[in-house]
Length: 238
Image (cartoon, rainbow, N blue to C red):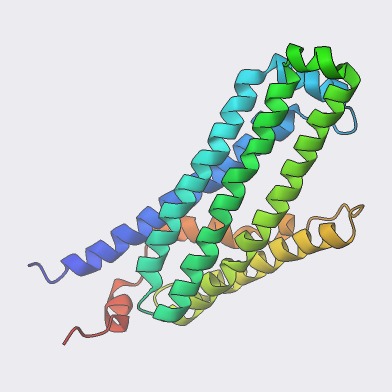
């Protein structure tokens, strides 16, 4: 066996993590802006129903994209666990648990989007409830979806704490990326908690603290990891 093969393998793992992270980030942003939230007219349930009904295909594509993101997230957590387990196995396990908890929450939350989609074009429901009530119920499902995102967001923030910690301690990934991830995790958690405690608040700290989640995958794709230092951190099987 080529003695350099394990070193090449760890950088393949890092680049896989970078690619998965970047795809997840881009698809989730694209779906939110153009496919789902982009069709919602704030404060106007009737206009929202008309928009979704007229662009049902785009709305479905947004839902499918959100589900795809969660599948990618599962594989990302597994790859990062493999990459960072040598630093501290217990913390890496904590990372994996927190990273995976958000997946069923976010996937199940998409049923609210499906409900809104069904109601937006449901002539059968309109005959029973009337257009006004139907639009109001559809708006309720969309609002529930937003709260479901906030619940999942708590775990999207929490999993960045062990991820950032492991990167800071690794020695084979720049510490600054770990610090940025911890700051990003705090931003997600604070945003979610603030909305739950103060529903009328319109401040999103995470809009300014997400840079670690952009820089980390780019670093993995461009630079990889310091393979020699990674090799030193791996326990001797003997």
